[in-house]
Image (cartoon, rainbow, N blue to C red; front, side, top):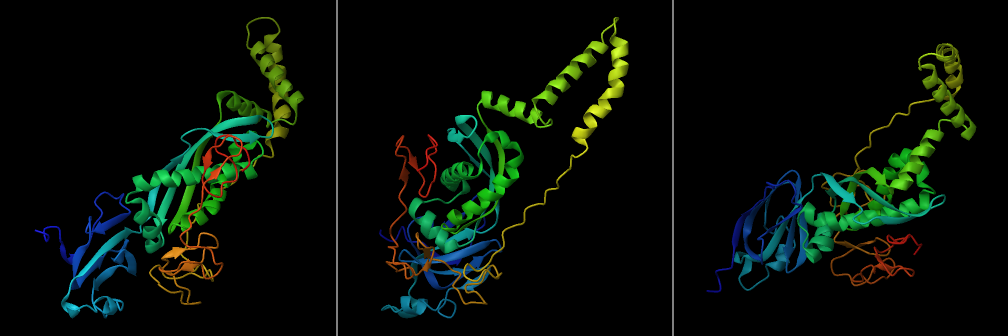
Length: 376
């Protein structure tokens, strides 16, 4: 009766039919009996992570692997059982999809507060898309999948959205003084957000390849102020704006039938080119260079390394990350209780920040409150 739930695994492989699954576990529930000498097939866009007794033992790149002591040296210790090398392993295998997942959505569920230097406290909505890739499969499973059960992009998107919105609010508060100057700075915002968020994503073993800001929408009355300011930007001061409006009124009058309309139209036809040539002669078009995809480099020496390398060929730094110190980012061994660099406890998780003014909860390391805009 007790053997009904046991799954004997001899050939382990997985293909993602949905295109949205980040991690797939074999077996899906409990632990399976993986026979000694079983075949593990890892596809080109995947990585295989072998778990035994709840701990990540090793990671495999693309190809066909035979689960023997020659391929996995640690199995020699695991298989030191009364049954010898004929005993099956009660373990699990996680297949991690390491392709780039595109067009993931981010945005503010509720308007975030922003202190504008000219307009005062206003609330903004923002949304866009981002591209995601698993860079460290073992660290990703240990930090997100193992604790929160996130297996698909839909399940992880909501959590990452909170992180992005929090960093967006911080970046806006530190770099933008007024949203009246915002429309021309979308590209700058996108690039700055990517640099700011890569540290957050890397702590989960993830890579942020691209992030785009599609729109930042203030309240209607603020949008009208921005439209007025953008129209005024063509002119040096309000006097020239009034001159333009007067010229437009005269042009309309010249189109009217009778009176002095035809004469005024001829005069304006000669005057208009000289009036506006000085304002538009200096316009220049700036070309945008497409963003480059994130390169894989060693975190210690920053030199490029092969995607499937377990150690850096230049400095020997271990690339297979099991977990990282939450304080200094040092790569830690699976059983470490304290960081070998700074002594920080490894089990301690970052605590959320609470605003002293409104009491709202914010993501750890936030600088500005998402609800009231107050500096934390």
